[in-house]
Amino acid sequence: MKKTCMLVLFLLFFLSSVAYADTFEDDFDDLSHVDTEQTDALVDTAKSWIQLPLRPLPNALALNQYVGKGYAVAQEDGVAFYSYDEAAGKAAELSSLKINVSNPLAVSLFQEEMGAFVLLPTGDIKYFEMGGTGFVENPSLSVLGTKQVVSITSTDTGAGKQLFTLDEKGHVQGYVSTGTETVPIPTMSLDTGLSDPVAISAVPNRDMDFVVTSKTGAVYYAFDGADYLPIQMVTGLSGVVSSQVDESGNLLTAVKDKVHVHLQMDDGSLADATAILGQSSVSNPYSVSLNSNVYEYGVLTGDGTVKYYESAGGSAVENTAMTMTGLTLTKWHETPRKYTSLPIRIGYPVDVIRLYTEEQNDPNTTITYEISTDGGSSYVPITAGDWTDVTPGDTLVFRAHFSTTERQYTPRLKKIILEYGQISIGELTATKQYLPGPSQKVPLPTTQFPIYERSSGQVEFTVKTTGAVQQVVATYSDGSTQSLVPVGSPSNEQNTWFGWYVLPITANTGDAIGVNLVATRRTSLKTLEQSPFIVVDGTIQSKLKIRLVR
Image (cartoon, rainbow, N blue to C red; front, side, top):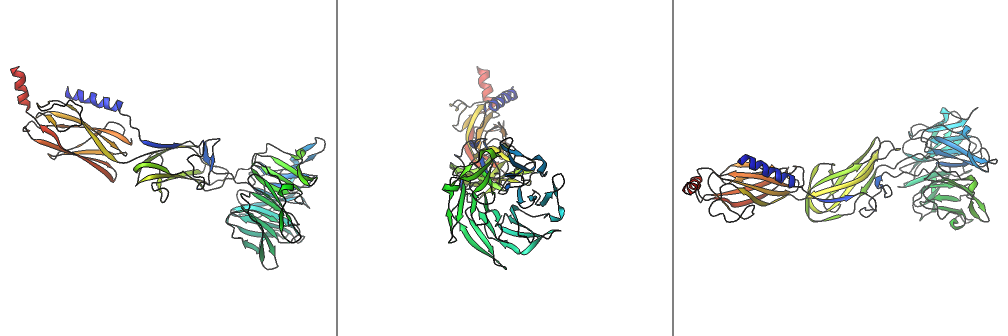
């Protein structure tokens, strides 16, 4: 009967004990918890997730005059060419000219002949020229195995085709086609020192001169026959994504929401002509390209739209007949990137944390996590689903790192839940006794001690813990020990533990029993001591005598 009662009591505790930890969660439908200054991953509040940002492709658009007025676009299934169709009264694709490659990142055309350099995700820059039925690769003029190239540009000075590359570290490398191969030229190698390079543009008819833009400005590099001399062109821009220069040194740049035009003056300075020739409202530009000068240019936007502008009445006006929409652009993600939360201020020193996440990841992508308890001064790795011991602190900062080995793909973080707590033990409660002594006046359950119990009797009790405690051990003053039974899952941040003590039949009235309870989680522990815990108050024989007399 005693064992049945104990089982019933245990089940009642188990069914009624629901442990709730302190939590922080974010599903990224707004920026209220995002440290925007420390986050360079894309927090897409419309889709409620975080991912790697797509990198604008500064040379995905190239205007040309191959078949009348037109342009080429590097997109997911190849480089497609579009030209004005007089019969239709609008631009149309020239399917016979398509260069069939996968996920091209950039295209640079030669206007005097139908030839093109195309940058591929592998780092290869392949050269295509017009054959009998369309574009075919000329492997002898291709450049293979470049690393981290973000922009290409080319020109033909008459001495051979020239190709310039700009990589993520700001290094420029020039190549010259000899007719049978394209080779690097040592004198055309330059470290710009720019930490945020965006695009390179060869200056037409200026031999080996070029312009490099960063996110904030542009520098003209003039070759003096031995070295490159940098000349600052423009400063004070913000968020440059693409640029191109014409032979007069006029500069076209696209930033996050507009297109700038700067004109070269007679004194060598540049004048901002954006109000006249630029565009003050362009949504998400990816690439810009000139026809022959800044008075005629195209803009490719991130939603796959090409807009074409021409000078009319002293300003740049969109030629809607040349508009193309619905293009599927190559996806090329920035990597690695990180998300950082704003500080989460807690009213006590947290020493254990558990992370839950909801992810939607493409192949070959990863997200790793870190947590800080000191407001972001130091971090430790944290794995989703596991309790992690942390240095006690009351200001949490959560950080996630996003990366991919194939830049067409991205990981996505859709939700985080942080459970956190501090290891503690308390609320020792006597829940049941079997042979109450005469001095036991307080009904159970109770937190008032000692409990007066006759010899051979039994006292059942519970104790509560926080901080994802893994074990609670009771050590009694008679030297015996007991591992308490968790009522809830041992993985709960908060839990209730069940124990019992059976008094020896030989215990004497007045004997006192103390208990020391130790809650542990790996190397962390907390103790709770109660003395006296139980006092022997009579014997089982005296209980029997009372019943016999009655």
